[in-house]
Image 1 (tube, rainbow, N blue to C red):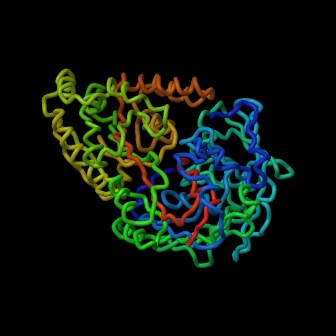
Image 2: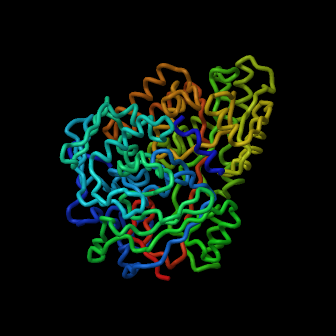
Image 3: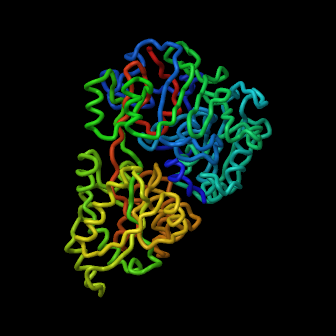
Length: 562
């Protein structure tokens, strides 16, 4: 079950066909962050934030303090999920990452460059000098090489609980390390639109091969990334303490190639309660905080020496999932009646204070892959009278009795979604029997498809692939978990075809077209809304990268002026 533990553990542009180069002009750092992120005419970086020159001269020292309400359940780079994956890029390495928020942003790590001699072959030339951090568990301080990549992806493929297992199992027809260890080659069974996103995901981390069968794998945290876990610095329920890796290969081309990172380390404390998280931030016991709303962010900025560093779309959402193998949702008219019962604006106003946007079948943070709002207004209008008419035309007496399973949790404001959902369903001609379940029980119900309808939590999906896969007969991860899809061979074939399109314009058109076909068939998976995410930092945190989504965690040329 590739992702079945995710919510349980929370509670506890284009590319050329031939070659993309990291850019030799950026020196050992391999990346000019300000240029890669874009900027404005005033010398500011992405989102109008100051560039490094405006932030001042970098200084060494200090420890970056963070807090989270989620457990760091393991440091195993292939089994970790949720909050764990957020810290993997601080410890381990990946080949190359592409930001879903800025398609022209690539971060080259183990890969110095790559080429595609054809649409199914990916050849990565590796960066020399990526040296493993000092440690006390016997992992040699050597350079990472292609054999580390080979053995990491072999483990991912053969470990059923690995979050990246389905990607490797489905899309690695073969992979091999060169004899000199400096080239890694992957072939796919067919062209694959989302290859770079997946191989650069934080579930595709590469660890030293000596670590993969080490008894301390789950707690050691030893790699060639910018930090290494301090001795005794990990406790799943309390803390994660990271020290600077003195062997880290990357330097700052904007500061005379000074070695990175600048900070001495990063200290993460587990703080389960949101009010306590905010209090810790207000007391500068943590240096960053994700505000619950725009109003909360504005209040903190007005009263403390802090700034909203980034305002980005959140890729998380709550969705209505219907099981088409159980009545009444085997009837497309009933599924459409549910679709027209959803007044997304009410969720936006009542839960997020207007600080969110409505989703279609592909959520809006994926950018142009989502259908425009004006088209969504035509395809999925809120119309409870139409819902009632569809139910009547399908031969059902009103109200139609249905059962909805949902997790009893406050995660992602799920508890605030429930009463809105129930009232809207009632207004549309349904009588809803509730089956609220403890989170772990709901996960089992959802994983095994033992539900008729679910108001479901979802993970972070960076691309349209997984939301479309929910409509596929094999489910979102291709192994029959969570969803039965529409059980429509034509829809299945079209979703599969979309994945093989690598031309950007053709891919965009195909993603739009398959959504329209699914609307016609009566969708069984309905994302509701995605909110905005506002991340605040104390103003002594300088040059922190913005507008890159999760990929910001790969960049370490920020510093503290304490």
